[in-house]
Length: 116
Image (cartoon, rainbow, N blue to C red; front, side, top):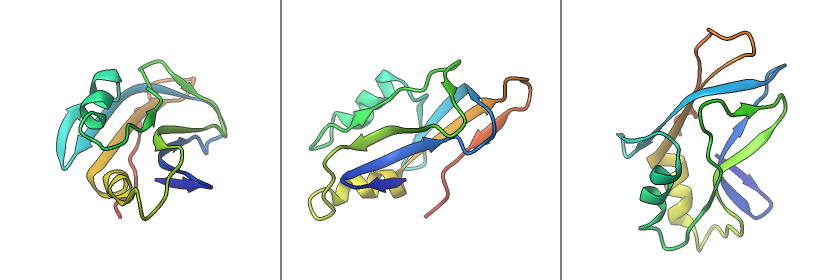
């Protein structure tokens, strides 16, 4: 979860020394598996919301470069008093797990957001 200036949402950051190759993603909403982080899952989560967040899809094979930071799901003009529902969604209700490997492959690393 991140809050930059007026943007807030779920962000993936590669803090490693080399690129990360995404092998899979898993989205949980209220503890239930929704699917992988793709267009269908994003739409199922976004459709009932009062404002449609912007999204970036991480497909298997996607590369996150060393030092790169990507908002997966965010509101561009976040206002805490107006978008409290969104902050609740991304900090308490929604989890996106990202499985990845280095260029060498075979490690099966997993990035999971901290529990708040």
